[in-house]
Amino acid sequence: MACSWKIARVHSLLLLSIAGFIILNCVYTEKSKSLKSPFRPVDVLPLLPRQVSWPALTKLNEAQNLLPKFVGAAAATNNSILQWSGSCFYNNTAWLVLHNNSGTEFGGGTLHIKVSNAHSWTCMDLYIFSTPYRVTWDYYFLSREHTLEFESWETQAELEYVKNRGVSIFLLPAGMLGTLRALWEVFPLFSNSEWGENSNLKFLEKHMDTSFEVRPEPWVTNITVDDIHSGDFLVLSKIRGRWGAFETLEKWVTGSYAGHTAVCLRDSEGKLWVAESGHEVDGEDIIAIMPWEEWWEFELTKDDANPQIALLPLHPDQRASFNETAAWEYAKSMSGKPYGYHNLIFSWIDTVNDNFPEPLDAHMVASVMTVWTQMMPAYAGNLWNEALNKRLGTQNLTLPEILVEVERRGSSFGELLAKPEQDNWVYEDGMSASCVAYVFELYKAAGLFGKLSSKIQVTEFTIKDAYSVKFFENDPRRLPKWCDEGDTEQRPFCQIRGKYRMELPGYNTVEPYAHMNEKCESLPTEYYRTPGC
Image (cartoon, rainbow, N blue to C red; front, top):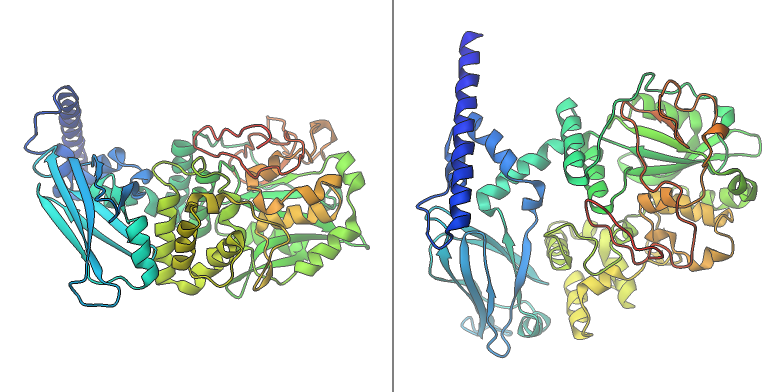
């Protein structure tokens, strides 16, 4: 015990010394950037013992450091030269020279990259390079001219693309070691443990400026099922394991304070059911309708993501206009169909620039899609290829062909991503509905949008958009007596499971309007949206 205490004390002193050295170095660097340090403390921290280095490194780097920053494209036209400042080398230039040294049909090219004026002798810059047909990477440690060879272009289309648009260049702002360090913030999110849960909560507190208050027990409500009605909305926030991690990242980019949804329905005999897109059966996520008891039992005993769950009752006026028969017809028509992966990411992206946390942008999205397409072509096609084709008005184009076609039309990939999804699009496996789109398609069928129904595309809704629509109860006095039992804070909805008090900023505030949620921003941490977007 004494030995362990001494080690901890030594580590603490070392960390304080390192932190002080880093601060002094940063202050000095700001005052005289023209003088090059022989090294920076952050460059050599990884060489120290792990017990010393990792705590310091995780404080110095964040998840955003995993996201490469688009610095530009080096093209072969008009002798264009790209210039930028890197993380290590302050002065960088790049240009592309086409040739046919390989004697192939479409020839190849050499990307020249000249780097200079490093801020220290121990730093280096890490880059990713991409065209619609390939992604590669390289790193630069020495101040000189470097080259990256493209032995041969795959098609005439790739040749024409690099002639006009060039090779895209992305900088990993934290470098190789910094990127590995940034992984340390993201990796724990996927852990199905108390460590993973705490990591998810800290990530959201840090990157969304939110908080998690422990609410009074009981953390599971003793529900009287007779008080739940058709159309009542269920929102879930999962905070550990695989689904907890994915929902955490989804919340960060969309501003939603929940990550999954479902809806309640009563049949003609009064039995309560839950309709849900994203129910797992034999490893496949499908649309399903199940008895309330089965759904609730699963969430209480089998869902290892520790879901926090809220019930959002419909407002009495909305409940009175809810066409239960039409809602059931829609629900049954979709039962058994695959989860709506086709429109999953497009509900988030409404604008060319204002939905991407820095340094993410449309260029980076295209490159990530290119990598995924090469690694998992079937999965990638399901996620975006068919949806992108629909936005272009084309059929069966591959992702590289889509990117080339966008360039040919004089448009941009960012503009293509921002085109609104249409509820009536039919994909290869049928109509596509994510968890929130499924619920709000059901609301459309039930008549809640009235005459606006044909002018609203609910496949454009994020979960935040959904719980913000003014459909729900606004008077806590009309809620069931068991709602938020024991909680000291009265809210207009019922939290029925979870240790942490669920917050839904913007809840029940937006009146439906034509083309709603088709052009909305979502930048952390304010997540401001222009009225009427």
